[in-house]
Length: 101
View 1 (cartoon, rainbow, N blue to C red):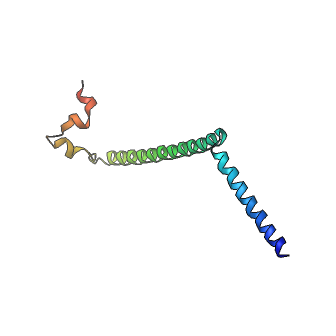
View 2: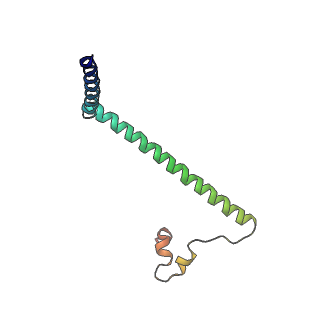
View 3: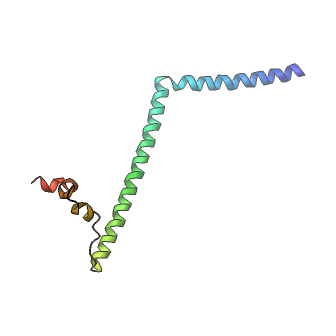
């Protein structure tokens, strides 16, 4: 009975080792590498979509704030005013496309 028990344990361990070795070997075949790359690319695309969605949401929120301030007749909150007033920086480095003309 003990021999049968240890034979069963040995078979179970052997099956686990063979399955893990097969998976590891598959990971280094061209098909396995292609699978890993496609999963990585899919994850990258999803992260990029999430980033773009966050940026668009932030833009929409800021645009709404600007519209509300304009409707109430408030002055626009210029985030770059301090930088423009600094003589070392000026407008040229903040908005270079406007000074190329």
